[in-house]
Length: 73
Image (cartoon, rainbow, N blue to C red; front, side, top):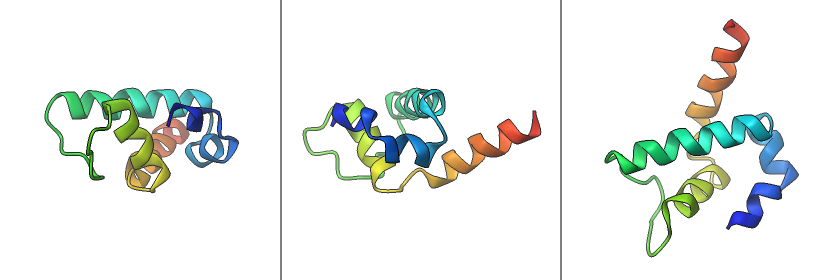
């Protein structure tokens, strides 16, 4: 799953490497503070859950929000 961090399509989908890192950090924090996973977690680590959520398009709202915040700045 970590190999997905090197996937250029995923990086472009989010808007860049730094945005991807920020999104992962934000979502992992949400999961650690009790948010429910948007995918079936099974035996996945929090990092794997976040990557699966991104790859499955479950975090489109967070991505759009990050892009909107950046354009407002």
